[in-house]
Length: 377
Image 1 (tube, helix red, strand yellow):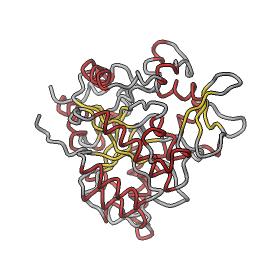
Image 2 (cartoon, one colour; image 1 turned 180 degrees about the vertical axis):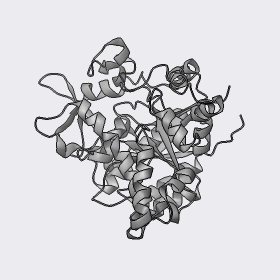
Image 3 (cartoon, one colour; image 1 turned 30 degrees about the horizontal axis):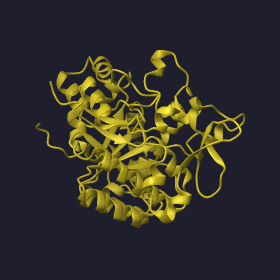
């Protein structure tokens, strides 16, 4: 039996992680949690104003409600006391999860930090939040970097600061980066201003995970503002943002300029991939001169792109049969409410009709190549 790597899981940050780890000059503007006097409920605040941006209990119920679908619990049932004393996220608890599920390692993205990219618009402040989270995550996983693989957060809002942070985390042995899938001022991710970020990632051999984030301009937002949509609507549509970010990179020739760059869409499923390649390549053959593409998307996919899939996707075996078995990975999304209990068992069932060698690649070897880890244990 081959190696098994969880390509998408999440750390659950202590509520005061940014206040404790951000540089002092940014502290009064850091993401923070405050309890309301009028009803005792908790709210998330940004910047120097005191306007609550989220009801904290509901948000934490989403990012920490692992298994509640199976238990019949609803969103918002999370006991915030566990987060307040930082007891949820411990190295021992994380290692116990890996052992229980049979994972050799996990890629770790933030949880509460998924709101930073969309809501902290000041470039300097966004970069400071990234540094603060990374410092905490590096401390938490110190001594276990072979199993707990943090995706260091960088922001495209400040490309120069992103490059500096890439230099720092690469020197500390980090293998992969997290970029939040959110539009920034209407700029394609293929804009020349971002080339320095792609160049730094390629130079230091760091892969890039484009992960969905919470932001007000998510794909589909303009289709349902009145009445205010619930989380189900948001969660169904925000997963498409990573696909759009990747599309801009392909369309504007990022992978022609940086041919060794490795990029994955994360928590955005897999059933769209063949249609996406077909749609791009159909137009490329007669309109490619209007884009920055230098080759068909199918070739770029085969060389530069990985797809993190859900463990029980019915479409995944079809995608593998159409596109090959070397670019798909599996993620649990632990400990989020949308996460998948028994992820390895579910994946083996969903992929059951494929050859065993394909299943083993999808469960671990493909993720190892995404991270450029040794394929031999």
